[in-house]
Length: 348
Image (cartoon, rainbow, N blue to C red):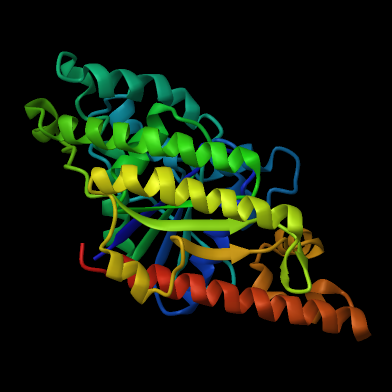
């Protein structure tokens, strides 16, 4: 059975895309078949997989491979074309068997208005009834085509209709964030937003017009997997004093606002599931700054934990230091992937 996991935070700049790519790779390395979906119109995840260094490279990809991206694959629903949705022809990720990408499209945001209208007025506008269930349907078709165990959905920051749909119809979600004041505020915001989205999805699933659509809108069963804290600096193996203070504030926001709100709306797993995963304060992982390794990772289009000495171009003491960092990041993502595996299979 496939597990659809949304990586979402309405605050940008928290390394959602980097986490999606590295986690997807590690899950595939551990024997799973994984599809990564770039649902962010900025298409950063697409750029981490495809070589987009040439001029107009993304536009050229769209022309050479029509329909091989999320927006165009959904056109039968969004443009009411007389043909059903089909599985997306995913892009295999170089050097990692079992890992695939559904490329994004810079114009995906153009569908925001149509979806928003459909999600509010589909009961009275029959022509829009297929839109709310189309994303989940095409993900399921594609997962079945590839025998996928996981679908990781990389979302843009923001609270629009597409994010509302993709979070509410996912099986689980992860909140990437940073130890700073803006992430603390975002956690408080999510404690209000996610329950509203779940309530909307529950009401929508009970509408006959959506339940009987070509792509039925199914009742939500979303579960919170946890928070990934990243983009902080270490000193003597621990977060610096300034970052440590925000770790405490994040913990207070998670435990004081987010978890109670999610629990009230049935979005939490059982307490023992988080305990069995060895989690504290619902933190899935703490990932310090990649520093110079992130630029090399992006250039090589491979995760930080797979970089080699040849990739890094260092020798002697410099390489020894970076080799140790790479090994640490490998252990971090192995632990993150193991927790995701455990929580995804937990008793819901």
